[in-house]
Image (spheres, one colour):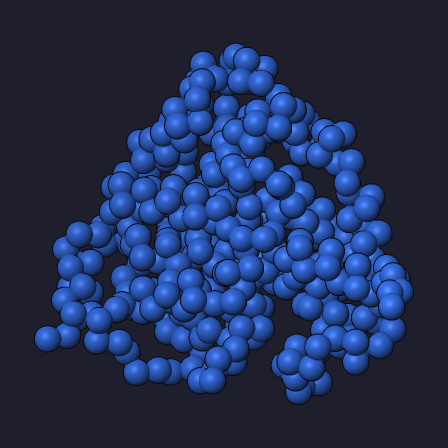
Length: 337
């Protein structure tokens, strides 16, 4: 019995005709024999979960730098929340839930230590710039390695969704478009929760005209936003949100930028982050041999320059590893007898 084939047949029964079907994938850069148990998108999901880059997300900042409280989000918990929201939307719209899950789990693999603050530093230091969505694609295409292959050799649909999950890019599949909404829904709401926990805002300080539309609690707002997408998009080859809900969501996002993301407490460590990462960047640029050999061994081509090598190495660091490197490199060790 080939369970993959059975699952593929089931997709054609359960999903709308405009969904992305696993048996119609555009394929991988390198052809592989198909699995007898899992569809192509399920295989991609599994490869991402088992990657080292995915495990490192647990020690990468979401908003609050290296949070010591056990209940603050990290880049890993953010990713899991995006996956849950994305899968709920996909299931409700009768689109391919496996594809959505794979994209969501891989969308932030290329994020830097210290969140968007770290991304801004590398974007400034590297002459060609740095965008975490592009770096996430580079992680799955090149930086992750196994005994079998260079990169994870993911399907084109997953790669496209990862690359276009944020910014001005637009995914080619409806499932990829879901991730852009799911990412936004997740971070707006869990960042509100973390900001309240940190004492930066209170639940009463959220604009009343927005909570009236979206809800007073995180679960109410998430439900309203998801329902707004389902109501507007169900049975249609689109992924859009009802106008009133969309406008309230975007206004709430702007509120978060003004009151949380640009808050003096949250931003207070950015000067230190910039100095730390700049020092690390310059230190490795001065002498590439200071970078571990297992990382340098990835670059046996003439495509990558020194900036690529250094920025890839730093982007792959966790918050804790970056601070450990600074301590080891720049802080003298006390002499003892």
